[in-house]
Length: 247
Length: 244
Image (cartoon, rainbow over all chains, first blue to last red; front, side):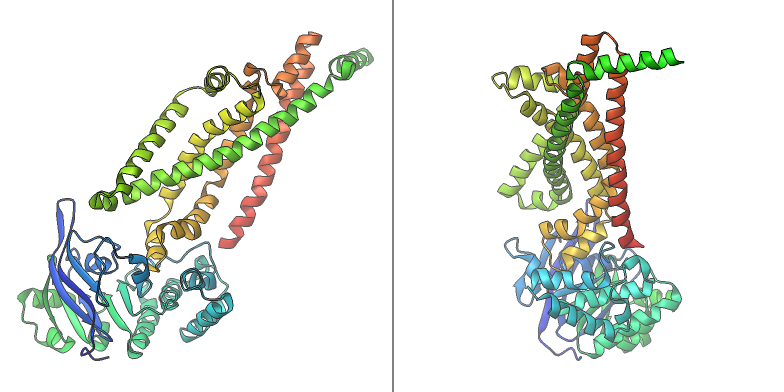
């Protein structure tokens, strides 16, 4: 899980505005294979938008994004096939309420990877066992707690064998006592060598798990470095100010 | 009392038994159901297509406009046609639409039943389209994003994730539309179709006794609607169990 692997995602001068509101103001960044990058910053700094640009849930206004060497901002690129390799976990879980947990997990592998039902279900059950939710395989999302929903959302994305996992404030909608179970799943994932980009307010997670912490402010990356550098000796006064206000 | 009963009996025989007049009602019911049934199918078909075009356009307008491709202009054009269709159909009475179809557009056709089915189906399609579009809009955008982030394309996301949820949500409203459609077919008599209403009215004209035939017509409509409501309630309960 060191950051000396090959470049997996590269952004070049990424800009994004919503109407007149400029959210991203030129972000050039590289994410390496196996790296766990945590993005922090005050609300409105553009960190979620940055993350959502990486799999084109938001179309950047300008700039380029390379994923595994392919320019995915090129209109000719088939974004769907690249999204299969980029798992995403949302703040609001976004499980499909009309499907059981197992169906939630097997839908995409069966439709997109053409996996056989038995194979997809076997894989899903293996993943469910790993996160301790095997017995909820046939439950519907409305029957689960927030923490359970988020753990399902994570393994649903993992069913596609992604090369990178994007986490958009995965614990922000959870009751405080449920945050731990989700973070521990994410920690295990990091330990297995998954490339992860995590937007979060969980500074303990950033400190313990991240290889690199990115601090965003006003649509740009104000500072980035190892958790140690960032938390003990931030160079940018903005970073210092932000960390002081939340720690 | 006995006199009242025998009077009633005579009325009944006069209106329904003599000359097999009951056949007017039975054939009328069958015709009404047939028109309504095929009109519903046509309406759902047209409605789904229009709703999907409209909401796809609304959702992807920004992205498509950026690329300025052929697809964008095609979609803008088709979307405009859909809007005109909705405006015309919802802005004019169904009986006028029916007469225009029968006496102008299909003036050469002798098949009144087919023309009526078309007219009612096209009419219903506009209402179904707006019901479905409302249903699609009511689904949280996170559902789209979750589907797309897994790598499903727009159409797959619609088919596997959005439409099933929309269908469940709009079922009561859709049923309401079907009931309205069934009753709207009662104007078919304007173009010489012997539907249920026309059947009852024909009997009234023959016997000059309006009470029985018209009440019978009303009861028959009521029975069909109650049956529909009951069946839809069952379907709805079955769909709901998946969320409990």
